[in-house]
Length: 362
Picture (cartoon, rainbow, N blue to C red):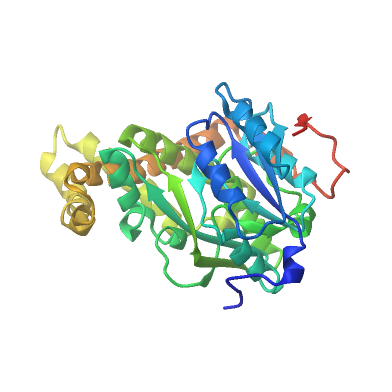
C-alpha cells in the first residue's frame, strides 16, 4: 500500500480543511477539537459547522476560535449533515478535506497519514477504523458488538487490521477538487449520504483506501433503544440510496429485511402453529445465543447481558427501517424528490455557490 506515517516539508505547506459537523455536542466537542488541534500536521483550517444547536456548542467553538485562528464557525440552520458538509466544502481553502465528527477523537498523526495516502494520487478517499467508546454497560456492549461481523457484517472499517481497498470509509479524507467535481454530498439524504457519496466516487473510477492506523475513537450509542432507532434510520435510508443507485444494493443488504420478514411470519404463526413459529425463529436464536458467546467474553461482566439485545436491535432495527423505506416508496408511487429531481451541482468551486447559511467569523 502507498502512504507514509509522516509528510514532507512541502506537503506540510498544503492547507488541510478539517470539517466537524456538530449539533448539540457540548459534551464531546472540546475533546474532539483538542485532538484536531494537536495534530502533527499544523497547516489546518478547522471548520465547525453548527446545526442550530440549542446547547453551548456554538459558544464553545467561538471560545476555541478566539484562542486559535485555525478554528472557524459556520452556521447551518438546515441542521442536516450533508448541508453541513457542503457548506464546509464551499468554504474550504485547503487542497484536502478531512471529516471528523464532533463525538469522536483522532490520534495526532491522523491528518498526516491520510494526506500521505492522498498525495500518492492513487486514492481519492482514505478512512480508518471506528473504535466505539461505551460510557454505560449497554454502551460498552454496543461498542463490542460493532467490532464483529455478526454485528456489522462486512463493514471492514469496524474491525479491519490491514490496509485494503474498500467500498466506503467513515469520516473520510478527500481531495477538495474531486469532492467539488462530484457536486458534494446529496442534501436529500439525511442518513447514508456518506455511503452514497463514496458510491458516486467509485462510479467515477476512483479508489478508496482503509488504513487501520487511522483510528477513530467515537462515542457510540449508549442504550439499546437508541441503537435500535439509529439502525432503523440506516435501514430506511438504505432504500432511499437504492432508489438513486439501484446497483448499490447487494444481497447482503437483504439479510436484515429477510430476518424481519421471518420473525413477522413466526409471530403470525405462533397462536395456531407454535411449532412452526419455533422452527422459524430457532436459527436466529442459535445465532444470537451460542454464536455471540465470544462477544460476551470480550466485554466486562456488567455489559455482557446487553450483547444479545444490542445485536437484535441492530439486525431488527435495520430490517424494520428497510421495510419502512419500501413502504415509503410504494406510498409515494415514485413521486418523491428522489425520483423527480436529479442531483444538482451543490458545490463546484469555492465561491460559485449561493450560500444557504451564514459563515460566522472567528
